[in-house]
Structure formats: C-alpha cells, structure tokens
Image: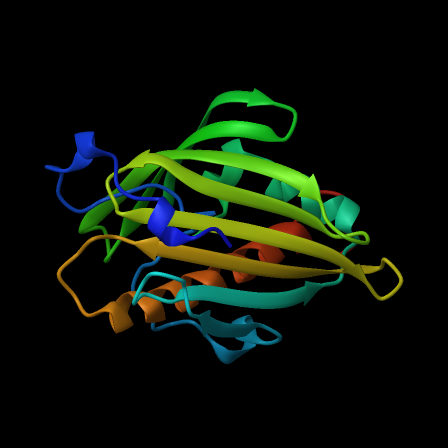
Amino acid sequence: MKNPSTLRRHPLFGQLSVGIVVGALALATLPSPADASDGHEENAGIFTTQIPAEGSNIAAGRAVIVVDRPIEEVLPIVLDYANYVRFMPNFTRSKVLAQRGSKAMVYMEVSVAKGMYTLYGQLKLDERAQDGESRLVEGQLIDGNINAFNASFRLTPVNDGAATEIDFNIYVDPDLPLPSSVFSRENERAAGRTVRALRQRVVGSPGDAA
C-alpha cells in the first residue's frame, strides 16, 4: 500500500466541503456507516482487519475472501472500472476519462452517511502481475475533495485454480473533524462491504452455474 502521506489534497480543493472519489474501489468503495441490516450469512467467509498506515493516525481497512470462481472470471470484473457503479457499495457514478489497456483515469462519486455527503475524485487505476500467479489492481487519488485515498485488489488463484482469493485494502482520509478511530473503523467496514459486493457480482455474472 502506498504511503498515505504522499496522497494529499490538491490545493484547488482546499475550500470544498466534505466529499471525494473512490473509493474508493475504491475504491471504495469507500467508507460509510455500516448497514445495520448486514446479516451474518452475507459476511460468512469474510475476514476483515485494520492495518496501521505509515504517517497517519487513521488505519487502512483490509478484507479477504475466497470466491469459487477462477481468476479469469474475477479479474475482468475488477478491471471493468466503468461498471463499478452497478455493484460497488454506495457508488453513484464511475466514468472512464481515459484508458489504455488496464491503465485508466476514472472519475467516481460515492454517497456516504446515508446520502448526506458525496465523495468524489479522479483516480489513476492500473493492473499488473505479481510474484507467482497473483494479479494486483491499484487505485490512487489524483484530484478530489478528501485528504488521501488509495486502494488495491490482490487476486490469487487457489484450490488448483478453481477459486480466487481476493485481498482488498483501502485507505481513506476524508479530512473531517472526527476521531481517527471513526475513519479506521469505517475503512475496515468499507473493505468488507467491497469484497462482499464483488463476490455477489462474480457469482451472479451471466453464464455462471449459480
């Protein structure tokens, strides 16, 4: 994960009130109050935690899940940036501004706090191979109305390629006058909601047996 201290708010946005990107992934994919209706069954198999972020009192959120689909079915969905709005939690807009292969500049908007705030921004997204058979898709904030944002999906084939481990990390600093523990908790919750939404998207894709 990138050092959040290097992803500071652009000065042109210094006078704007609450808001950002995503996600946000963020994507976020982005921090918002947890839905009280989230059931235990929906969260089954999802591991979440907080990860200390260098140079910040706000922790990043991490979520890990295994989906019963090969990486060849999961990766295209993660790379389908324009359609994040169709399944990512709280996304209200995702527009590809420019793209070459898996590299893209994407504008995203996310509604948080039950619609009280809109987070927006421009993200740089890219995908690359990792050691072994893993693939990494990263998003970094270029411009937006928050202090910092970065997120990443690490996809790894498991069970002889029949399934995929999704390891998602997200860090958002929305520059709001609240305790850092609040945002750390929301980063963790956002990570969990994101992998849950991705699992539902993958399993529900056309052509699946499910």
